[in-house]
Length: 72
Image 1 (cartoon, rainbow, N blue to C red):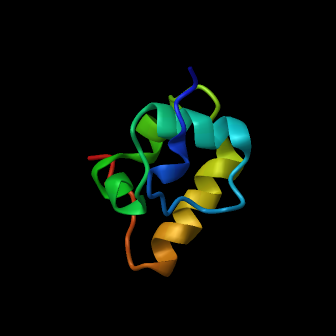
Image 2: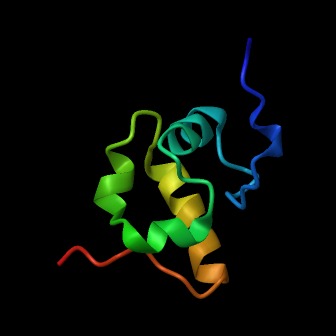
């Protein structure tokens, strides 16, 4: 029996490609605010994530006044 994820609330960018969305949802990242605790490098390590998807998330974070965690 397949799990229906449609009931899970997500505010990820609608334009995210399916591989990137699957990678993020599979890792438990459904809310943009979660990315404030992650660096861009950490997100790029997920299989299915690439520069375009990262940029889409960065823009969505900026639109809400958030950003990725600094690399320090």
